[in-house]
Amino acid sequence: MDGEFQVRTARLADAESIYALIREHTTELVPRSLGNVVENIDRFLVAEGPDGVLAGCIAYQVWPEIGDPLKATVELQSVAVRAACRRRGIGSLLVKGALARVRALAPADVTVLTLTPEFFATLGFREIPKTRIMHKLYTGCINCTKHTDPFTCPEKAMALEI
Ligand SMILES: CC(C)(COP(=O)(O)OP(=O)(O)OC[C@H]1O[C@@H](n2cnc3c(N)ncnc32)[C@H](O)[C@@H]1OP(=O)(O)O)[C@@H](O)C(=O)NCCC(=O)NCCS
Image (cartoon, rainbow, N blue to C red):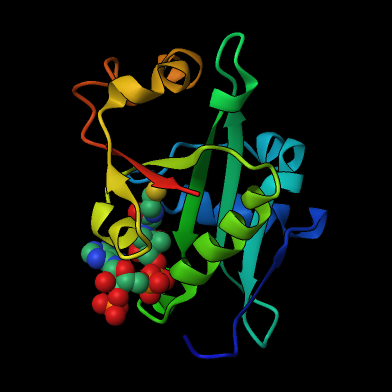
């Protein structure tokens, strides 16, 4: 990782850049409206270059399990690095930054649904059966506009025990 990029908490002033970055990745990422980005801005981190330009973003969301707070899943979402800035460690830095934040909640694990499992594997994530995240499927995937069935969706479910 070249040290010119810093990961920091997102601010409202980042919302439009985050929205634009997510829109550049319609295949890999679940779309978000600008309003949704603003509403969830406190769960976003961004990577910023020396010129102040946003190089990447990440968010997380807590999915509750009925009746068992300790089985809530924390999911990493909207993980994106600007194409020109890839393979310089920025994605890894963003995931590590989000994990540091999420650790304070002390969840059993952190999950992700991804088309790039190789990237998350380098950070210790391992593939899990989607049946382990039924609460995510029923509350999140059920509203997916890209795939009608999470079990035929090409995204892999992965988890990191923390
Ligand atoms: C996936 C993504 C976030 C990775 O960001 P990045 O800054 O390039 O990642 P890093 O530089 O930290 O990569 C660390 C390691 O992960 C692996 N890796 C990264 N991107 C990879 C890819 N596309 N395919 C396979 N392995 C990959 C490599 O082993 C890499 O190490 P190396 O460069 O020394 O070989 C970025 O490619 C991206 O924004 N993709 C489009 C959106 C997306 O797919 N997001 C994930 C959806 S959950």
